[in-house]
Length: 160
Length: 295
Image 1: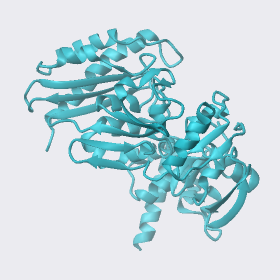
Image 2: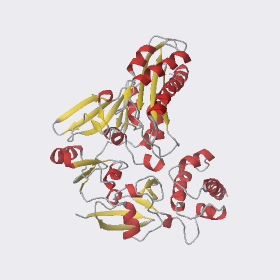
Image 3: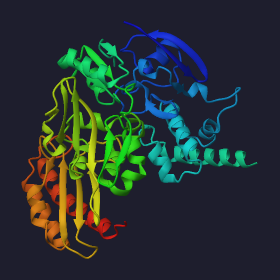
C-alpha cells in the first residue's frame, strides 16, 4: 500500500504517494529524475548516493522514501543558485578534484555538511568528513585541496 | 539492489509500537536507522512481512543524566549523537569513542545504539563499550518490562535474550567512580567503514592517582560468537599496582578466554596475537586517563 509523503527537496515542496519499499535514492532518481545522487553499491559502503537529509549527510540507498516524510532533502542539483556554481563545486572544477565524477556529488555534499558546521576545518576534519565517500580514481588529495579552497572562499566572502 | 515488499508501520506512541510487535512478533522487524536492517533485507537475509519504524516514537533519542550515578541513553540515539556528546566523552569515553569509530559519517548519522545492540553481531562496536560501563538494557513488551545486564544479553551471532515481541527502549550506564579512565581500540585494515578484526574496551579504576587498581573491566569483540568479558584477566589485575608487566599478563590471560575464527578479515592466529597486544595497549590508555581524572 502506498503512503503519502510531504517533503522539501532542493527548496521545492513535494507531495506524493510512494511504496514503502522504495528507497530515497530510487525516489529521487527514478520518480523525480534527479540523477545527481548515484547508485553505487546500494549497501551503504560507497557513499555515491549521499544526500543531505535535514542538513546531515546520509546514504540515500539506506533510507526509505517514507522515512523522509516532513523532511528536507538537498541533492547536488539544489546546490547551484541562479546558475552560479556553489563555491565547493567551483573549487572542485578549479582544483581538478573531478576525474570520472561518480563520487563527486556525494563528496561535495559531505563537504558541504562539514563546512556548514565547521567553516574552518583542519585537513583531518575534511578527511574524516569524506571518509565514507569512496573515490576509485584515487583523487583524494585534490578533493581535500578543493574543500580547503572552498572553505577559504566561503569564509572570505562572508567577511567582506 | 531492490528491497522486497513489506507492510510499513509508523507508530507514534510506545504503546502502539509494543502492540504491533506483540501482534506481528517474528514476522516483524523494528526499523531504527536502517543501516543494518535495510542491507539485510536487500541481501534477502531478512524477509520481514512487517517493518515497524520507531522514528516517530517520542523520547527514544534522548541522553538523560541520572544525577551522578548513571546516564540513560535512549535506544534511538544515533552513533553521531553519542560520539558528539560532551557528557559521554567526559565520563563514558569508551562509548563515545566506539560510536565515533562505527561505520562512516553517513552511517553514524542514521545507525542507532539500539540497533547495534539488538543485532547482536559479534564484531559490533558498541557492545564492548556498553559492557565495561555495566550497562543494563531496558526491554519492553505489551506484557511488561525487564532490565537485563548487557553482560548477559548476547547469546550468539545475531542472537540475544530479547524476545521477538520486545523493544529495546534504553540503556542505563553506570557512571564510573573517581579515578577511572576508559579506552576503546578498534583494529581493522582501514579506519573507516570497517568491521572490527578485534576490538577492545576497557575501564580501569584506581584507589588514587598513584594507587592500586580497585576495579577493572575488559570487553572484547570479534573474538568469539558473542562479545566477551575477560573476567579472569580482570580478577588478576584487581589489587595490583599498574605496570606494563601486569597489563601484558592481562593480555595473555585474555587470549585464553577468546575463541576467534579465521575469516576474510583475519586469521585466528593473528587475532590471538592482536587480542594480547590490544588488551595491554587499551589498559595502558585507560590507566593514563585514570591518573589524570578530574572531579
